Length: 137
Ligand code: CMP
Image (cartoon, rainbow, N blue to C red):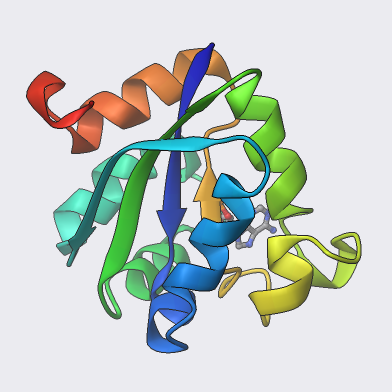
């Protein structure tokens, strides 16, 4: 069993497709162990994405992530990190396989509907960033 962090980004929240995205996870063997809707501050987004600080897209990424509320979740299941990434599809929705979340709900590489941890190590850090131990059931 693994745990991973998923974020439903502001574009997908604005489109009112939170339930449709959650259904992809639950229908594919992932369980929601924690969930909340939050409005990130500028400093929250900068800290969460600090790994991308030197990338040219960093400022646009932070601006986008604070443009509206997000839904953050801990997903739990067998190989949850890889399973979540498979369900999300490629970072750029134009390259995402048919039937993936990003192919079906995302518009662009910035507004790409969801974030998912890219490794077990980062999943642990990202989960701790958003959730206290008692919020994870
Ligand atoms: P995410 O999985 O949330 O991780 C970092 C985000 O940066 C990524 O999804 C994209 O939304 C965004 N991004 C914008 N441009 C790029 C790029 N060229 N390469 C990777 N990520 C990018």
